[in-house]
Length: 241
Image (tube, rainbow, N blue to C red; front, top):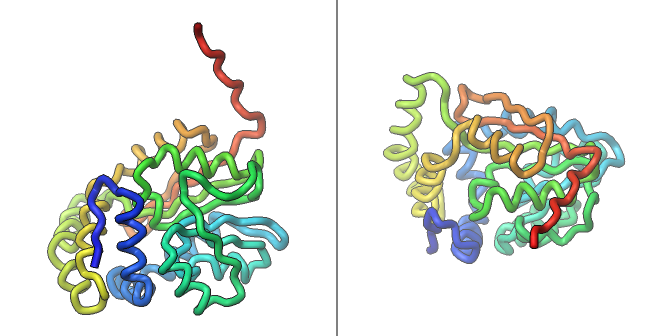
């Protein structure tokens, strides 16, 4: 089995997710102590999909995160670069139209989507800014972005307990329920190395998103960042001789 390193080489990350695809949803439910459903509900409310709107669900994995958007009447496009995840997703969610795609080179025209969202996937892209810029490219002016990602608990005692859980308990639980426990060692390390809430908000703003804000879920273990695509695109900078 493969585990990615913190330099997040795309072929390593894709292979790692291929290897955990079959039991991915079950493992996530166990490791999150059942909180994944509440987090998905919060994403749905933030995206606020309407019938007929187009929603891109990037890093959709097996499509579990995409189902609520389809149920709301939106045209949802689950996109992932792990072919293993897509194979499992197509079998379990035959009503969804899965698309293989790289977060840095999305196979969609500019302004294709009313809303774009990524849950627990941005952290695995080796160029965060590039992925956020690419999401902006495929979003219509005034469209919205929702990023759901692990973050930093804001209450110090919870932060201490959480770090202990990540580094000690999580790998042990993963050995019991996952087909690739080493992948969840990477998970713990990547969460610890990820920017805090203001840090990620700064990345969104630097990528060109406007009205950037966030709110914490589960005490800041997860944060929900939001942004809006500018109505008027920025004027290109003139090159200097």
